[in-house]
Image (cartoon, rainbow, N blue to C red):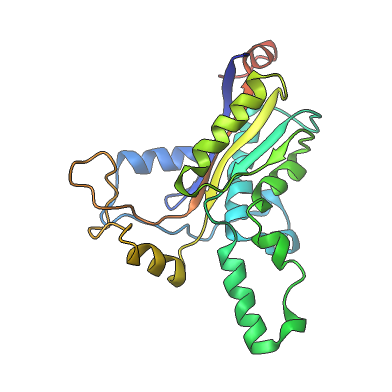
Length: 229
């Protein structure tokens, strides 16, 4: 199949907005680790009305995708470009918020945007629409492996000739009481609050939130336009 290049990288993390910010944080970790994304200025990806219609996981994905897209130097619309942005769970914060609305104000006050905000494919759809990606638009929801699945699926779309460009990655924002209780009761979370997956004494993971997105591109296409690989 065709070779695949990475021509853009973007991230939103508990360290802040930007892949460089995340990299510096990884080089100088804090104790205990930060887990939540702090509020940030998202004006670059939309106005207040648009942003209110995004669950946090989709907002993080769109912000990270914007960084990766700008870094790639591409411009849309692109007819065969794919969007493959995944999540382990999806818009849980939206669901919980609307459950409260239902209980306190009644069914007629539940947002008509609840369903498109909560769906696991909300992030990949938002990315596809924002950048004019006219090719495959898909998501897979495979727990902790979802982001890796996204990269594999997107790379296959390019290597097999289905797409020339793909925006791919993962996003999550489910640090809420019900999710934390569920993970803790299945003994999946670290008792020490440190994530050490390759350590002999590892004891679980640490919940976090954010997004990581890359722009993948067919190798010769990237070289022909002088992209940084």
